[in-house]
Length: 475
Image 1 (cartoon, helix red, strand yellow):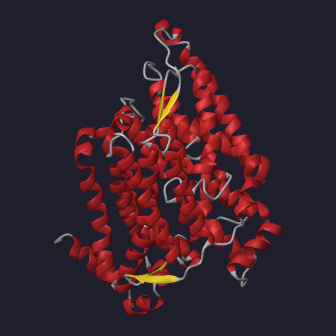
Image 2 (cartoon, helix red, strand yellow; image 1 turned 120 degrees about the vertical axis):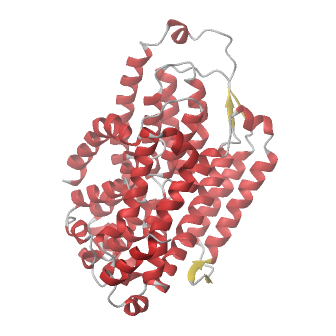
Image 3 (tube, helix red, strand yellow; image 1 turned 30 degrees about the horizontal axis):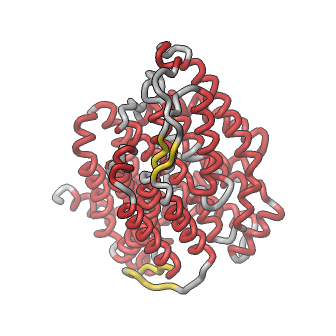
């Protein structure tokens, strides 16, 4: 606290010459008055996630909750001292509107998916792995990237248990099932769901099928070639698939009904309009509260009705969702200044980012690269609002979106593809990425570090594909 007080004083002296005016203007004023260096805690937690597992793995495994809390408090304490009411409102808004529903959705899908056990002998041959990838990619748009990832990652890991070379399989699973496959419906990925809530027609996202087909086809082909290469390096006993083969079976299949309940709740929250209530000064829609209550009930029913033996067979533990909840609490807290500055547009300290976007290609890359490190849902909304303000200023949002679709459809396609596809660029680009990584590590897979993931997989595999998407669709 002694160290935080001087920081608060510096902030008060150099950042907010008129705190009262910021309070009157609310969150919008914060984005105009925050300095660029207020994003340092956000950069700090990202670097911690990247570097501690690499250079101090034992410390990180034991103390990552403390590290996450420390970065959050370094931001929140001086932030609240300086900005008072507006800061408290932004923190409450982030918690009530974004973080809590985010964790409820992930936890419900994680718990329900962990109650479905796909047993039997699969084997880790390239064609088998490719089949799982294709099924997961197709499912992701309809049961969500988190739902598809939690349903299939454990069977994939069991199929490859005896293989020495399997890290690439988990990484490409993250690429395809946890990200790319979610672009065809608003159910697939949170950015598209937010777009649906703001007026993008439900079935408009199906128009992204060409972009998804290109990306998925190239990545699946690259994966099959890479997996075939590594398969040939495996021991003969592994490639021979010896032993007694068991028929495929599904245990805990009743969890599919709970999964349908989750999807019903998510869709219903976008279609119903039941008014609003105020929680800690934040306006929340009643239908969203009902959705979250339904999701929690689905989680509870799944936990109660699924036999323990099924979850044990699935090697289910709470650690992956615990890790996601703790780390993303720190990320969501420290992300408040960067997002506020982006929302402020050309009036904020990140105006250079906003000025850089002027055509579909630049929207694709700006949305995508920021979605790799920021939460892709608010990033999507930020650039959607930027495109509407640039092309259809003064029109109500829903009317402007319809005009955007009719006359400048490529802009919305670029923003949507950037947010969904490039969430695969890092472990933190999309929440399922981190969950898959954690589950794989629990199963004994030595996953690459934060930077190792980017250097070994993102740069050589994803970026060339995204350049191809840019050239084919957005130039």
